[in-house]
Length: 465
Ligand code: TYD
Ligand code: MG
Image (cartoon, rainbow, N blue to C red):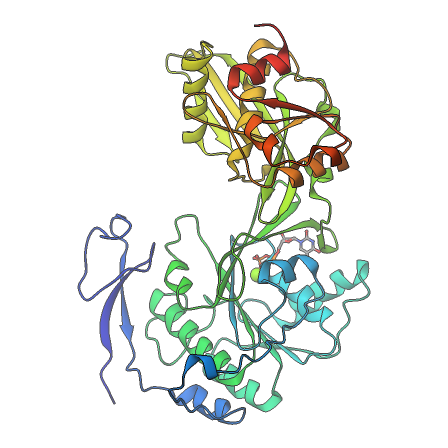
């Protein structure tokens, strides 16, 4: 038997080294290197038998131009959000890793998926739950959604990867779900299930299985706060697609993001709501994120943001109060704290608002994490509105990036942002002056207020000098 090779992998970023290092040269994490045993490459014994029953696997060199692009038939998941995040459906032979905190709803999402796919023979493997638990959950889901009644869904409670392959070979499924990578183990890896070595060996093996057989595989992976136990980072470059399921447990909705996708764009976003009867697709997120009762209150303003390819109206809330103890606090939920500090510095320096002795708390309502810089303007408006205890005019929506010299910089997709505000019944839209050049104003019914710097923006919102 060939000897296993020892390797060290950073469980934060996946950096590999032949010797143990205290500090990762790639991501600077301390004490993040874990020993893993890499099995010799030739150990194809597990998948080779099942693969050969599907298709031959011979390679040859040919000119790229002569390669016939096979129209890749994607599998429709019957879930508009999941389709969108996957880039148009499931690609045959792909390995999709679904990551997320424990209890966020990964198993629920996948169980709903397989129960909806009636025409497909599905093998749902769980190493975490018993048949009984899965059945109970399926019944619960079916109570509110009678459509989830596929007779082609088979469950298997098993933790040995080799046994899973055996069953797969017997039943020849068209889709395999494995829940979760931390619970299964392979003879190829050493140590116990969930260790970096096992997690990696299982994932590599499943990738080979998916590629050789053409069967798409969904793999669940738990992520811990520091990513250490689960080591999902070391899996990211093995799999084809990494989906992350996130959300706040206090809130009902969940966001499905694609972090990596070999078959589609990575800035797509799927939004779900976790209800008693499982996850339901949210087709109009703005309606859910906006709290109309807050209209007329100080410290609240509405921004038109773009996440992925869709526009959402989000509510930014700020609370500014005199610092009770020495150092003022700055805290942001759903928004980058460094960017908040930058915006506060701009307000201090360019419009001479004295905020240095104030506590500033910022919150994106609903718990959504927003990376779109076009909400800067709305953040500033909310802060000053709270500071002056004066509400932002009703029915006003805004978008604009704030630059270091206090200029309001143009934003992308302005027409789409305005259209969303119109759809939600807003009457005024504050936008960067530079965006006016490219905008077809004849088609806009909402009142447009172009501004070129923070001062102008504040004047148009709050009046005065
Ligand atoms: P689960 O899918 O088990 O999470 P994961 O696999 O990511 O660990 O989701 C569990 C949570 O979802 C649990 O807290 C209960 C909640 N839930 C509902 O609110 N409604 C439902 O219909 C189901 C099935 C679960
Ligand atoms: Mg689960």
